[in-house]
Structure formats: C-alpha cells, structure tokens
Length: 149
Image: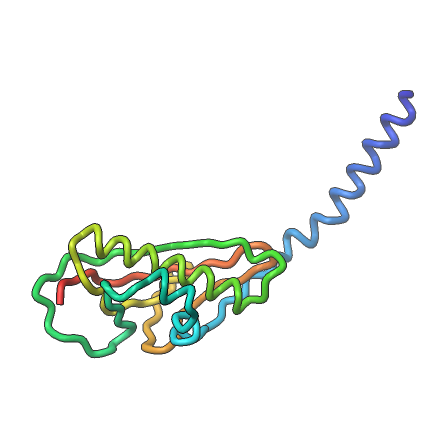
C-alpha cells in the first residue's frame, strides 16, 4: 500500500510540473476592436437602450448642462472556448452597461470622452476599444465622463 501511495504522489508531482510551463506562458494579447461592431448587435442595443448617449474619444457632443464626474469600468469575462472577438465584444458590453448604470445612478444622460484604459494604458479612439484576451479570461477597462446634456 505504501508503495502505491508514493507512486501516486510521484505521478501527481510529475503532472503538475508538466503543466506548469503552459501556465507561465499564458496568453495576454491586447487588440483593438470596433466599437460599432460591438454595439451593433440586438443584444447590445437591448442592454444599453437609448436613455444614455455614449461618445468615444473626441467625438463631438453638445455643451453639457452639468458635468458629474469621471468614472471607470473594469470588467473581465470567461474567454474559454470563445474567439477573441466574441469574448472582447461580450466584455466590452459589460463595461458599457456598467458605465450606463453609473450614469443613471448619478443622474446623467450621457457618457462622453470614453477611453480604453487596459492595464492603465490610456488610449483614446472614436472607433476602437482595447481588449486583452487570454486563454481563459478577456478584459476591458473604460473611463468616461458622466454628464447631463
């Protein structure tokens, strides 16, 4: 019996050491994805509705009646068995929903100057957002100003 127990421990340790290199080389690819494509799905339109407007980068918007403040949303999603674009669109929508909910909570009706802030790398674009996609997790971080237009 003692022999089998030792043998099982050796096998378990060998397996753990065999998979350790694959964990240490986990993928974290940062890419740019289309805002328009991510927001064009029926699911996105239903979740975001029309009571809060969104303006990315330096897109023009009317003079705010009230500037409420700058807020951020940092979301992660399960990327296992999903394409990068599928996982990134999904997690982007989660971040957008969080910004919408914050705007509503604060009494705003728009989020302006929305920028990506993945891993504290602030990037501004009217057309794209940054998403980090790995083997297991995808993430999007956004910042924007909540205002009343």
